[in-house]
Image (cartoon, rainbow, N blue to C red):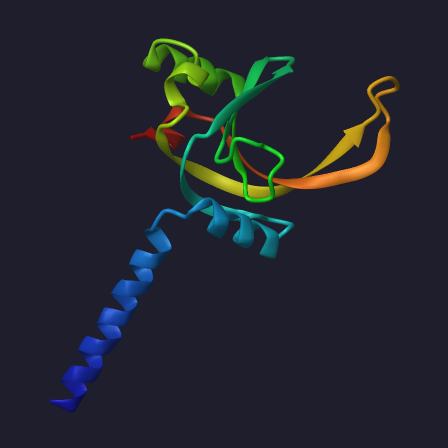
Length: 149
């Protein structure tokens, strides 16, 4: 009987650990895990409510940023960096700009979150001014990596 209870206990612990590994991470959990592994970041699914949407131009089109905070520079923000082809695909699916369709919605983003150093630049010269902050970003290539609730 004792051996049976030990086997059941170990099985329950293993099942709990497996569930914990597959659970979606909050922004706080993702940021902490990415900071703990600066070289490789952390791979998983990150779930949050989109508080703001930004964009940046690239050679292949606009990169769209889905932010967990209204201030994308906040240390508690995690940004899903939606690459141009993925952004175009999502916009077609949703029927318009991501900013109009995703602010206030819960999303689950699958990918690798990494800490990225962001340098402040002099507006006139474009050179670094010596100040910076870190942003946690998840690079998203593929609409199948974005779930919208």
